[in-house]
Image (cartoon, rainbow, N blue to C red; front, side):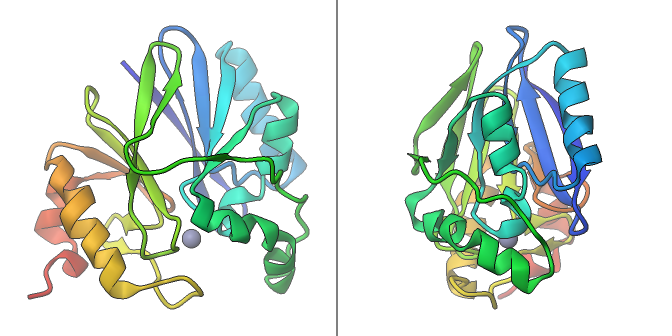
Length: 214
Ligand SMILES: [Zn+2]
């Protein structure tokens, strides 16, 4: 069974997830750790839980989700897995974060391409890639069928959906990703979004106003 630890990092409160199983191998999703104390909190948790990070996964390339990429990749000598269409965001991460008043370290660009259907393993477990563009062109979700969990990045939030007014955003494409991919996973799936509290597909189908356009 996969275990999940949630951190809320940086001023934009990105959800950074650590997922591991009984083998103690783990993946780190969207490391948003920015300050030294945030980095220390992540390291302390990994060390105290005796985990071994094997992959850094990005749901998408927006600067708030990749602020800690450089730190995590170097600290544990692991590669960054991201959809190729969001790699341009990594290349522009310094410039974009400066526009918002942040100074970040350049995320590594020697990334591993991921796409729909890929299986990303850690220990005895794996996450499958669901290509869910619309918030960005290379946005993906990560899910596991056995444990019925899905990490949606900024595609789906509890009670809301991701912005589509930023460069690369497309409302119709995001709705297509939500209604024909994420929601189709099944009502019992637990949803771990890029910001805010976790939820379930069932709860979102019942209460999320964006899933009720006719
Ligand atoms: Zn985003």
